[in-house]
Figure 1 (tube, helix red, strand yellow):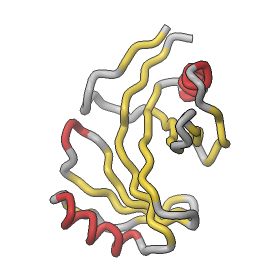
Figure 2 (spheres, one colour):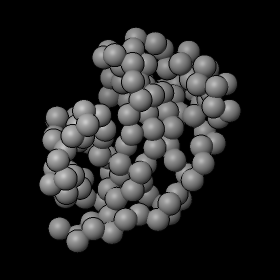
Figure 3 (tube, helix red, strand yellow):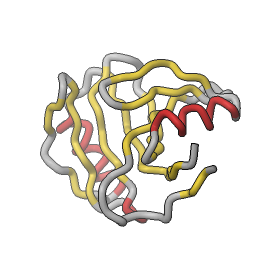
Figure 4 (cartoon, one colour):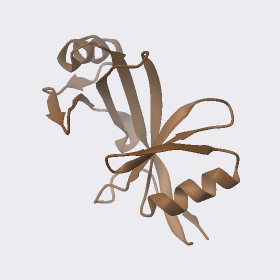
Length: 127
């Protein structure tokens, strides 16, 4: 199915670290402005404003091991998941409103709904 997708940004997963604490470090390390932490559907996040190319960079408090994962945004997350499965990725599970995927290399990533607006890089068009 025809759809669009592009790199949305990077999520810094922080094992049992409050998002405000994690954001303070990563803000200073990367030179981005830490925004106040917020909770959404039982998860805790803090955005880091100022990333280049309109990329979303945020910290997230998690219960699994700390890691960095990327998000791919798409106007059709199911079609994008199928496209990436054809390339060798596998679906790990649907969480809230996005797909958690695993690349053939073992890296986890998410497919999220495309943000409104035209900020950021041009999306790829897939048939």
